[in-house]
Amino acid sequence: MKIIVIGGTGLIGSKTVELLKQRNHDAVAAAPSTGVNTITGDGLAEVMAGADVVVDLSNSPSFEEQAATDFFRTAGANVTAAEVAAGVRHHVALSVVGTERLQASGYFRAKLAQERLIKASPIPYTLVHATQFFEFLRTIAQFSVVDGAVRLPPVQFQPMAAQDVAAAMVEAALAAPLNGTIEVAGPEIFTLDEPIRRVLAHDGDAHEVISDPAAPYFGVAVSDRALVPDAGARLGSTSLDWWLTHAPPPPPPAR
Image (cartoon, rainbow, N blue to C red; front, side, top):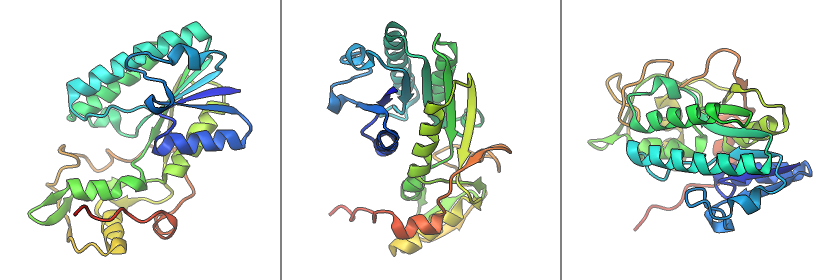
């Protein structure tokens, strides 16, 4: 099959393209660097020609609500028009476990609007809701520093490896459209502070990690199960311990 991967040069996208090619599919990375721009529409018609499936891994470059909403609406309209013209049979999109529970966040309001646009599209679809990636644990820590310490709410947290997210996207792309949502998560449940503490210890980062029930998650209050999937989620196989010892090391601090 010809499968277009929008955002195919990014963290999840590059892994998705590689996994599809390993299965002998014609996987095409669509990104500005490859001549495809979902905001302007440049290159979309050409790359979609003959495509069977589109895997949408695009994300807004801004977390601000209006900017993110504008991004998802514009990109979504352009992609849908190109899919309809090309006769694409399946649109697979990556979203976030807990999107509907995180509506105090403007970014997640924009994500929910994106999902509604996908559901309203004439293209059969599958939504893949994934938990947070191991690769972003350090970003969570950096964002959560208050007065020299990392403060995080002790809510349930089930992060997963980017490679497992890519594998889930591939499985969804090669299956029939669900016109529904799949949830995917890591194999282990922690409280949010635990994996952050372990990653920082692994890095030799001296920041103290404090479990604080009043602390927000990316600026919003979260309930105990806001960040974890419901029963029946598909679980990745990569443990945090394995990832810590096999993943590339973090970049050196800026000087």
